[in-house]
Image (cartoon, rainbow, N blue to C red; front, side, top):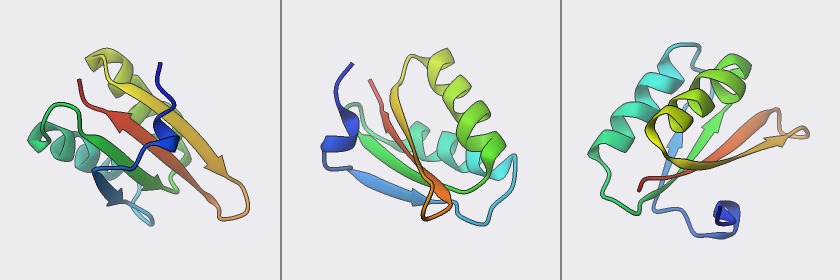
Length: 83
């Protein structure tokens, strides 16, 4: 797996303040519209979305992803690469 967090994201999706299921729904819609090779950076502060639903969605669809919890900022950065 590539070190996605070191790559420049093609697009950033800010879902801070959104609760389940909206972070996943918006991530899914953004990825569906994105071109192959897109690196999407998702900013998410909903624990269930960041640690469960978005990673499961990525695994199910074969997307590479990296999850970084920024304790000091209170949210996660999720880097997703669309194949």
